[in-house]
Image (cartoon, rainbow, N blue to C red; front, top):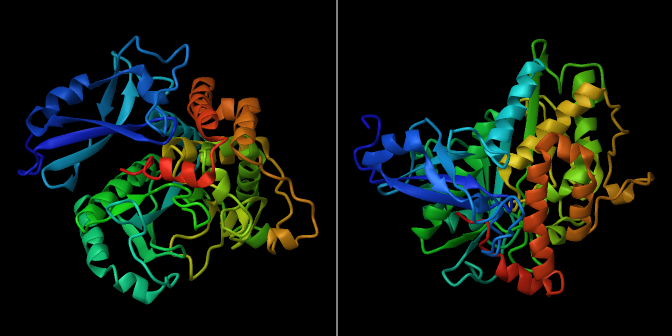
Length: 432
């Protein structure tokens, strides 16, 4: 194809399964046009591959049948020498998205927002841990959280990462070494919801390939090491109507409009039943604890990093204006499902005119109010997901069943194991 870089040899197309894993196939660049039309073959079982490499077969998803990965029509993103990447939709033989296609689900949710007169923008944060070639800590000795020295010690890698991101068309907002030992955070520029979720996967690929060039490996596990800092995958959502932003310029709390208040209320109302989507892995609950800045309290607050929903108000210090950050999301989540659930629950709050609960302006543990607890542990989060009519409404019963299948496989495999053993087993499950 004439629009391809001359040095491109292979092009990969990937989907994300219900366990949050990225699965791909590659075609020679010269045959890309053929496979854009036909798609790449995939078994229905691709949707229920598990984080540890198994398959959580269901009555609907087994060895019989054939699906096609339909590649996005955009030009491939260059992610490695000679290698291009494209996101894909999981379709049937006729080219229709299947009920298990998370990317198509997110596209429909975005269209529903547009039909309601709302334009949605999503920004994502990628937290990960740098490791050595053997899967241990990349650096020894002390660690300075957010330290200038911590970043400068990785200067060559960070420069390579920024260069590779630019070549791949991945827009970065910020890059820094984080609080945890060898922890890196990359903030991506806001985009429309589907592009934002695509960029999460592209970002993991770019980070992983840059790290490999410097003798490093990358873990996107929520908890790479028991007892140490975990990795989040926070999502930021802003909404705009024909009258302007709905999260600023209003008469409500901190400038919220009535629509913006209802959107936040919708996210909070649906969150307990969607926790199994946002943070449903066997190691997620270990991160989702008070004191971890993971949003373990079901509440909202202005710039409250211990609240499940943090309001970032408009002002000189907010480059992209007001938005709400969902802090419970971790890297084990399928980003398309997580964004669809986040946006869908906000739209539901708006449609129902849900009232905004009282703000929590302190550390939730210091609040004099009795806050609703999120489901405690993986099994409880999955039970809440199964019982949630809202989850079925927003995601569809087949997707909910698929998530439950892969995550309950994890419960059976890891519930009785020590966290350290589980963390080691799943350390690279969500790396690209």
